[in-house]
Length: 113
Image 1: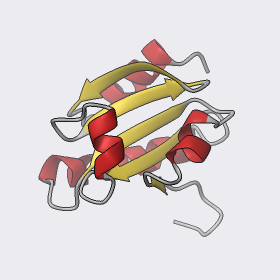
Image 2 (image 1 turned 60 degrees about the vertical axis):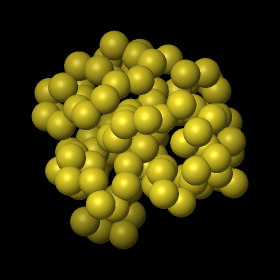
Image 3 (image 1 turned 135 degrees about the horizontal axis):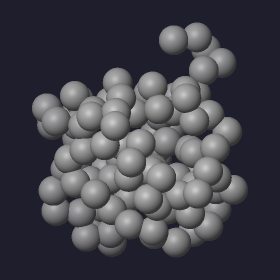
């Protein structure tokens, strides 16, 4: 991946409002943990989608072990959980997506891009 390519933006309790809620773009938030095998399996798909949808959808990640307050406030009990946020409002959430086609279908369901 080149340095100027979109990547998954790491978001914390402190940066969530700025990076997600105030984002001008629709945002996919990946609640994950480093020890979670399904989370690791989905990451390459998210990276590829971030490249394909650059400028249309922002892709972010929240480590549940490092951002407990945020994880609790959104009622995240299972990972990976994907939150879909647009204009500061949650549009929906999904659990354990993995295939590129699944992600594309769900993104189109929640966001009009």
